[in-house]
Length: 54
Image (cartoon, rainbow, N blue to C red):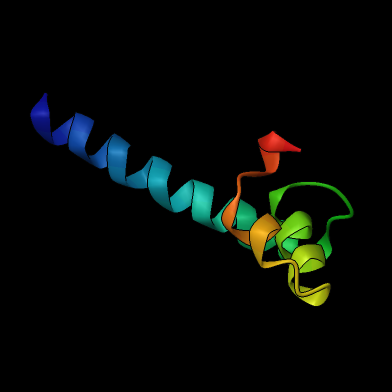
């Protein structure tokens, strides 16, 4: 059981990273698109803050 939960934890982490990367490539809305928009506007405070705080 511990090995199953450990694998689940690792796979969830990888899935979230891949989701953000996919949003950076082809989405208009979402965390990845928000990061790209804030980066292109040089809005460092928005890059550091969470997208849910807007």
